[in-house]
Image (cartoon, rainbow, N blue to C red; front, top):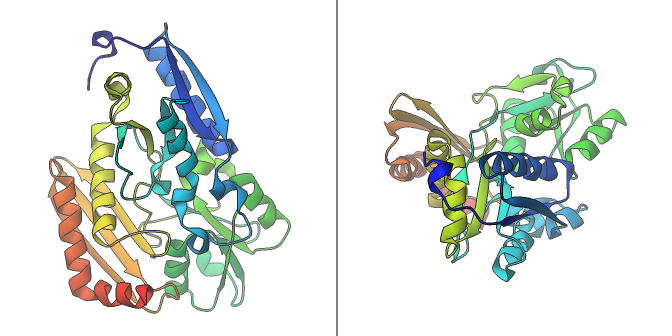
Length: 315
């Protein structure tokens, strides 16, 4: 990891951020970390509302995917009105636009999914016909595969909005990312953590990325001390798998890498939305070449039936 002492800091850094409570937590966390590294640098946050935040009455896969949470922030970077944007990596499209890059990925928070319910201790305790809320096709397909007797329905809005819908009795339970609940100080709302075998996480879930323009060598140098190498390797493997499978919000896909010494254990999953078709595979390989590991596991998933699921989804 590069030492901040060897870097010539800018006098000011502007962070572009969505204005949801979670996005602002992420931006403020990065603001504090940068201020600690570079005391002479003024770090400010520019709050923005993205298209993904404005359109709440339709599922993400119907309106263009999670890239809708990123586009306006990238436009601010391109216009020079912000220097960096902080993203939850699970919301970042698998291919960045030309001229943009991730300058750093910070150490990962809990990457798993969280089961939240007021009346039931575990997912398996829900009676037939119970309504489960989730915004994710990946979560939906895995719930349907294990519990076809449950009713899975779309759930949009920020974390607090989703919890309020649960509290209002609109759902028997909801499934959220554990990382978001923990970052917002809402860990006490987690009823149970779903293991990767129960619900394989999304690529990049729990990790934060700092995006900037590729041409901004000064910014990239300042962000480098924040990069957590093992988190970056895991996320790179997961995103390589997703890219090789054309992963997006339209595809129920999970990918999760864990460091085991100098090796990465990568698990992948592709499913149909209704959960009737589901293919899993895993592979362990060198942490020094995470993209190769992700690409190889994607090929194995395709050979085991994922190609047919993908073709059906595209059709």
